[in-house]
Amino acid sequence: MKNRLPYILPPAILIAGVLGAVLLMKLKPEPAQRPRVASAPLVRVESVTVGPYQVRIASQGSVTPRTETNLVSEVAGRVVRVAPSFAAGGAFAKGDVLLWIDDRDYEIAVIRADAQVAQARVALEQEGAQAAIAREEWGELGKGDPSPLASRELQLAQARAALASAEASLRKAKLDRERTAVRALYDGSVRQKLADVGQFVSPGQVLGRIFATDYAEIRLPIPDEDLAFLALGENPPVVLRARYGGALREWKGTIVRKEAEIDPVTRMVTVVARVGRQENELPFGLFVDAAIEGRDLASAAVLPRAAMRGDDRVYVVEEETLRFREVQVARRERDRVVVRLGLATGDLVILSRLTAATDGMKVRTADQAGGDV
Image (cartoon, rainbow, N blue to C red; front, side, top):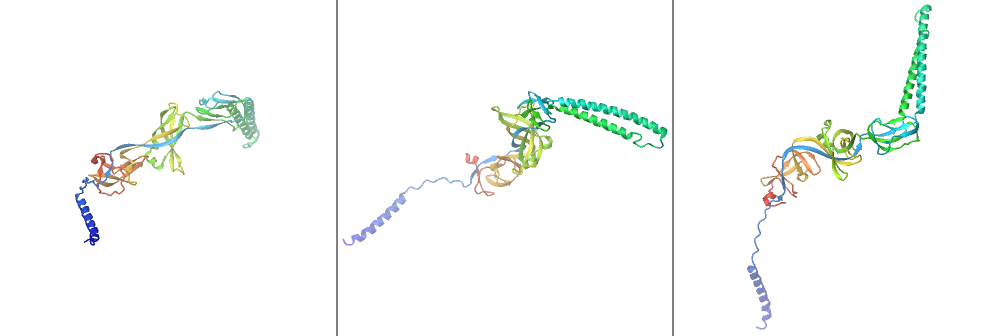
């Protein structure tokens, strides 16, 4: 009996362990039942509103004068005087004299030209009298028609031409005398002064740089496709905004033209806005944001860009079911799209991103789940 105990004891211990494990498994409490989670994904939606939509095209640009000119001397001479307004930042009106050139030589030229005109008139009178005498003598002594030389018609024509030339020289001398007073051709301001008293200037020499101040222009680049929403022939309104003088300010203007070329790098078209500066002071060089008023769309829906699936599809919820919907996009803006066709007021468009979406799959909206997604 003592010899069999070592062989019987291990199997007995193993059997006892198995029975204990089975007993423990039967006595283990059952886990609590978790509520079954619905398999339909939860999505965030937005209700669509279809109605009239005013297109506004955004752009940016810098304010520039509509005209900027080099003030150039048309005659030679020494500068004898400058106007107080002929200084950087100085303002002037159309017709104001900005700079005077010594006109004494030009006054002498006018006197000489006037004398030449008087001499040419006397010569013409004398030649006319001699031509009359020549015609009378030919009538008494000659036969047939006299030659132009015999009748002094050629001499008379030469005298008329000499008078016309003298009168032209007089007009030129007077014009040069007038040009010694360098005048402004428009209301404006001086950007740069390049000549002063005592300086000798030559014809064609730049005396300064001036610009017009009656209104400002802003070049505004826009995408080529946005031209379809602009009635350029009707000068569409534009609103400009910028921070100036420590505050956000606003100016109103109109689009007056479109430049002929497309930018070869950006592929953008440039339209030009014009703003009158007499009513609204708008500083040149200011960088502004622009909102151009485009055409009205009679019926359109505005959606966040997150609603689009590709170029022309959205997902909508119909009776807790996801449906694919093809739409026609009128234009794409920075953070939203304008849909012309394919949606109706009250449609629920899905904004949530779905990794795997199929037409007809069941979905839940935030309202059905009792909270936000």
